[in-house]
Amino acid sequence: MSRFDRRPIRRTRSGSYAVDLGPDERAVLGSLPAQMREALGSRDDPSLRRLFPPAYTSPDDRDKEEEFERLMGDDLLAGHREALGVLESTVSAPELTAEQLDGWLRALNSIRLLLGTRLEVSEDDDTDVSGSPAHALYYFLGYLQECGIEALSGGSGPD
Image (tube, rainbow, N blue to C red; front, side, top):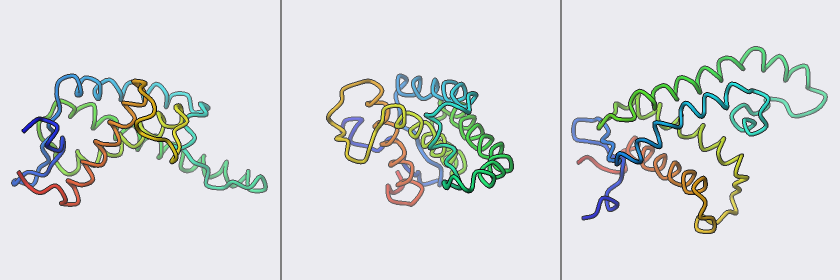
């Protein structure tokens, strides 16, 4: 059985979640939180729009939108940073708790949203069309999310 015949994230009999990734994959994942934090430092970056979507879209609701941003902006930012911290601190771990895996999934989602926005990925994109490293990373992160969600939902079965 090749390494790719198994899901890289799966539930174990003990209730934890095994992470079967190679050193190169872990190195890439380990580099992403710092890059994401750098992007989060510039809240006016248009590629962050999917991470901080507007609560009100009507031009008539600009005051409400500013109030929402004032009240919730720091909490949203803290949530993104917390998830990145979990990914960063556990990227080398062979197993994760459910809480840690949840942090991974939230971090992967944030990174994919940013990357997908920068790549202008749409629902119509064919995953085989682009051979760029950035697109490959985008789809790999999506695959990890899928495996993590499947494991948390009990779909991948224990080892």
